[in-house]
Image (cartoon, rainbow, N blue to C red):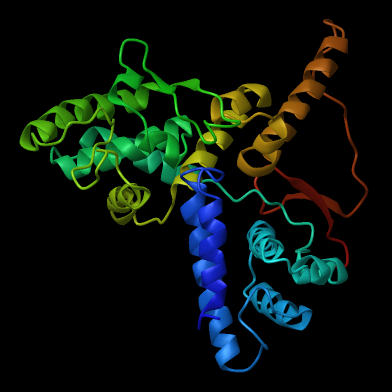
Length: 355
């Protein structure tokens, strides 16, 4: 047996999974196994577990490792992915230890009834980015960075979708972007077209001109990529390359965010203004359930305001035209004073007598 059997078996498994996992998912899963192998080898050297081989690890070994990972306060989604990846490798090796441990210890997965939807950008941050677009300096780095972020915030495209977007996919007559290679495009993903809002048109126009100059300076690059790279073999930027471009905007606005934050920001903005079906289609989801659960659901304040407006409209329609529409005269009990609660959009009553 090799000194590091966990990664040896993981290499065998991942070799078989080439072509099964998408080109985006495969390296993500592989990195997970490398990190697991590093931690498991460390625990074996410290004699906290009996083996580092996925063939021989016992239920006690698996429980120790998964309890350690749960102690890292991972999200419910991340913990589920950790268990699933480990279980697939163990099943490949003919070892049922992971599935047995999880069935005996269901709390390993359980993280409580917490909203899985991470927050979008604060609207003030979104507005700050938009307000900077017209004043972006003329250098290539700035124009490219702000064009990329503006495109992601305004359309909600995923990194894989913007990475493989071609320049011919962007139509400046109708200002649409064709997503020809969506997430899961070889299996479940469906191509779609997303509209680009007016505030992003100027920076994208400047970017397209700057892109022409960039390719002239690097005449050895022959690519149709919307965001080209002179460091890759195919002319398309890597995921890490996109991340590094985005960092320039992060640094200048003083707020950290990632591409999923941009996607949630777009989803929330649309969800507050459109029907959820339209939002779901625009984000490329096959179900509105995914949209509402992870990316955007109409905010409580807007929903509350709409219900309140409905009540007031109904009351007005039932009120006689001759009678002044002053509402209902409500008399509060003695000592009951309505005050504003320090939460946007809410009012409460508070007894003040004897306070």
